[in-house]
Length: 240
Image (cartoon, rainbow, N blue to C red):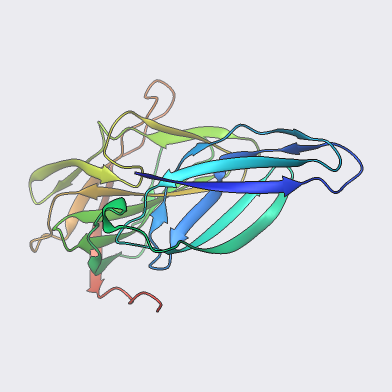
């Protein structure tokens, strides 16, 4: 359940250059806005003048027969750039069926920050989608406000949602099924957007508590976020 993208570069300069990619410098999304996690990058190296070199990265496999993608990338020797990619037709069994959002919830004003004990880490809840399969998808953003790199992430095993007197555990993440702690090194000013799915439904109770588990509790913890929903809106249709 992966896609592999191969990139070839040629050093047309007069001196050797570093030729590498980093997971945190790659973003891939299809035309519906669905983001795909980058799960692996191939080893880099050094390119001598006039020589060509190949790199690759792997992402989650396509969802809902997606063929059109937008790729943003940068690297040690690459300027920030975006590319439109189109996959050829492929068998349906190569793609996973994923429920689309049937409604989107917005948060009451000022109720989106997820505080933590990690210096320089700003975390917030961007919004919530109700999916056709009955799950709720929570979109989060982690941002490094420091002038140096920091380690951030979350632990799917201890992340939970309290709503309507019920406790809901994670059912899925943008990196697949919940598993081991997710940890990523963010450079200064870098952002990590992700989503978490819970199997709970909203049934008239618009208040909730979101508890994000820390991947390294001995180093930092997230504080519980208590908030209320503001309104529900139908999601915008995907571009043709």
